[in-house]
Length: 535
Image (cartoon, rainbow, N blue to C red):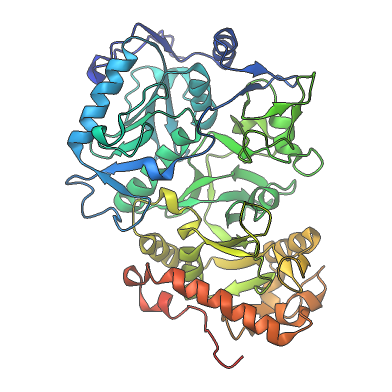
């Protein structure tokens, strides 16, 4: 064992000269400081709870990428999520943030991203707040004592939530900002204490570096491994059941949110989990519930009156209440740093229009098309002003974090299908028998049975028919599922009403795809749904 003492790194190379620097503090130390300084409260289960202030979620309109020689021809500047700034703007704000931090205590954490040793990147995090530094401890990969000796960071994250920019005078939109400089390898965050900006800043970096420079497909997904060593991947936007369906006792979890797929391996980017807690109940999500203990950080929650017991149904602050914890806080974690290439991939959607099948097999063109689409639907009542089903599209199920054109990621997925033979499935956890308000939600037991049948290889032995609007391949039977629900058209009382709704959704798919079409190939474009006029 290496007994060399770990010392606070010299930060002069960053031109950072703060009053007091805390290096690599433990969760216990950071909790103690947070409580002493009034940054949070301790819940009865031992978790540190705190409010993130003005921002309870990411601010995509205030995330910028430095446009320079490295990025000008690579980044998809047509995306509304990739806002350009000039190097001079970054440099000026960087200097202002360092001047601000010079009069404050800072918390330094050395960590890493990517569990695969061939793709690991070292990260040095500089935080103004102690609980932010604890978030970095939870979410990134924690180096050993030996790895800290001579630690050399590849990237830096500097987060100063108390620093307020002067809006357009500083070259940004308003007082908060998240800036990514791929040349200097710095993420600069100011004016917001929402911890998710730290996590998603690195995800944005990996979505550029790995596909563009390392030929690794980066993915916004969960992944698990069965007893036979088969990997499965689950993509899905909020509300589609990604966490519930991937965290099952008979399979071991690789990770719940961000992964890379290299030539022969699927690996987690993170060392922790960042899960939503709104409506959390032990009987439905016991792994998350039991992980909320000392060392976990719970954001923007409220206690039951007169107690320190968390009221998970309380949305007084936000619907986006969350918890972060190290991945080993949950049971059934895959013990290896990465799993084999997947045999099956699931695209999860909660179709509130009630026209997509509960399970469908996709060919390569359809898989790439639906990957670029990243579809689900909001239902009436979930947001103010939403009175009927509303289609939601997020390219590659993670549009805000994609520096490259979605066609790049989709093309890589198609190449993976060709080289590995992985099968991709569309799973609709939404409505059947009609749209939201008329039909009913697909039974969770049916969805679990369909996924189980896929993973056991049973769906390779059944007959399929092709849907006339979406072209999807629908099975005629599935073990444990009433065959009557497999074809959505058969579940509607009025076939004409079904066709009208299906054509409407197909039109929305095609309309959304228009902005991506020029960056895709013929195989993807030919997989678009058919809008039938004679209905």
